[in-house]
Image (tube, rainbow, N blue to C red; front, top):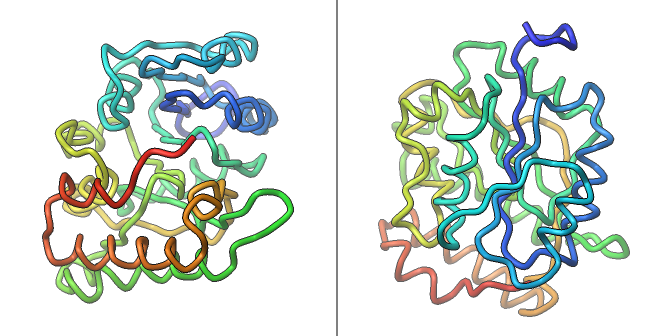
Length: 249
């Protein structure tokens, strides 16, 4: 029982690399949580902008990974975390102010091993309804088409911008994130977490940056997101998929 009277102390882990344009807003939303998180850990992979200063100004815990890599950084954060529940949050994703209690209520169900949210992609002025709908469909459709036996056991394909939450114990029992994967470390973890319980898509919304869509254009973005889901299902190695999914800050 946590000091705020609800079950499960809650650690938020945010991997960063040159996120100076997004992190401050994300941390403002984190600081507005009620009840508050048990701890907030920003795990930096060697930013050359003012990312670390923003985190320092916000008063959160700052960890520095030996090298950049989202899976590696999130594992470093999970190793340092002391909460019962882990929340993996992208630096450009905005969360509702009751996320802590929603996560605690959801994972109070022992049959659920992991949960995520519906991600709406936008930039404050525009919501990318089509891309958001496609990504939501992919959460269900990719496992249903390519892993139907696991879908009926509760597999849902979650991505990092959906804000993944799980118990710390279950995370490590599943082996944590695969640090060898350049992308799709979240989908890979889902395949291992479903062995420990259902993966739940919570009927609540988080807001993720559309900076990739701005760079690529809506049609190219839709094609890339759809292709990644299909090629994941067909078993194409993530290292080959990475060339279609360049880093954008």
